[in-house]
Length: 281
Image 1: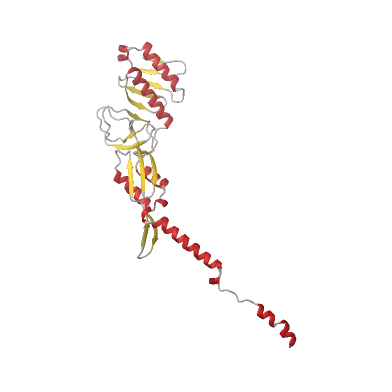
Image 2: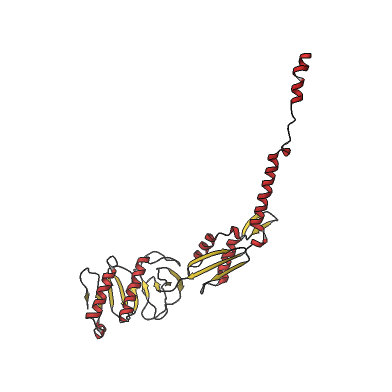
């Protein structure tokens, strides 16, 4: 018995009672972290000072600010909690995705070419709009010469990048018309119907005729050959797969040195698509 007293009882007295979990430092550290996270979440999502209160839109002319603002508000408003009887939304400037807003606006309004979006603390957004400018009219088929009406034809405003952006009920007078050979493919508003490189070619030829000889272009058939019809009722044929600058140089030389003034009245066509030669009649 003396042995048990000597060796066992001291061991029992040396044992410490285990602390409850809530009495440990780790527990209070976790609680502190939860409080901090909850506070930051409230600050980021719900603090009134950082809720979007102002949306400024500049640069738009044809697309109304109300329509653009409707898209912005739908993207800005984030649903945080939804239950059977509780619905909590946030319009925090910190959660606004300018990328999503930009994508939604460009998809909804083909008339808009570019948009930049800036967030200004604490509660405002600025949208800078650049709308497309009409360069010509694009029609699925060649419009009738008897009328400016687009009956049975689908025509759109066309910008300098080759994008169609506005459906037209009729072709405006004194407007250049661009069209292509018929296809079975449907076209849609906002589509890039002419490649940028080709669109640049059309503008380059048109500018050369207008600036150097005061000749307007009335129609362009985007095909191979590429055919321009002038306001003087004669045509110019280009090879779109060859050096356009060289062909323009040949055209300018002919109109400057050979086909002068009155001679253009009887002109029917100029063929430029042959590499080393140019023909006219």
